[in-house]
Length: 486
Image (cartoon, rainbow, N blue to C red; front, side, top):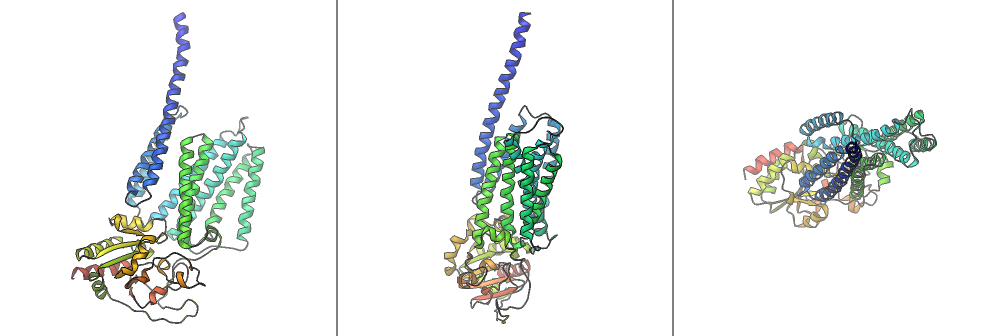
């Protein structure tokens, strides 16, 4: 009897010791995971180490998931592992099939799914209290409401951004009278509903109303933003998805989720600021000015204000190949037109041929040249362009004056000299790639149409500029064929 009594006493003690051991292991695992996240993000700061940073960050997330599954509070491993398997399969298929030019849409969806996951965690946490006498405390309710608001806005806003990028919705700003007043009324309604929920947490109808308002707010947030501003919107939504994850971390009491969400939120805000500086516009101007509608067509050239026709010089692929092949240095300026034409591999092939002739080739990357931050870097990396040939705007601009030929492929506003000279231009003060300072400039473009800002590009009519009209992929292929003959 004494032995059995001692065993009964020892059993819970051993169980408690095991729980403490596992609990300490979980916290250590979270600490290691957090450190790996910091290292991974640091490595993502350079194209040369970005893949390594992505791998390190992926390992950190895997470790965080494994450590979380060791928690004694997890009660249904079959369901969780099944969902992981399904999600992994869907992600693998999407990653294999998505075109690099559609990467912005994929990132938009990822942001939305992150927001949805965080919102569902918050909703589930309160939902389990309905029908019981257990009322969440004020701190928990604030975390739940923040998770619902930020997660809901991120989900619906990301879906609208996806639709604009995909072409399902028009890229032009979609506005209506008193839109800002309507948005303000929505926000006030959410705050009022949240206040009532803080006094009556188990009011199911009120909670469903706050969820609906958060989703409508996300739609109204993105609709009035032009398609050309989607790089900024994607960065901001990425930040919001991180903040939503942090809110979910507070809801479930998971320190790793709080840390990871805070990292994503902070990095997204920093990137958003960088993108705004790249366009010389404030975030409020991007979000509320309903500016731009994407690139427009037009085969004739008019001055910005008066419709005066301007002459342009043209060059055919044979002459262009001779200029490139006999140059000592060439700077390639990729733009959105290159991405649309999926011409990155043709660019790499042209670069290889110029290398064969002893021409020094570099690439000038503008921070807002594509439809998402780093879009040009990703496209060129897919074509195996060496990282050490990619130059940021600040590094390459001083070198244009010593460059024999600047080859501009589908870029518009980011090379427009009006940003330096035309004080009445909407892009005045915007940092640009100074391709006009090169000894010669060749511009590959379908037409003389204006860019996102809606102003004529002075570069097209410069004395040292020659236009090569046509699809970027077609023109580059012809250039490659001609250079091979040199």
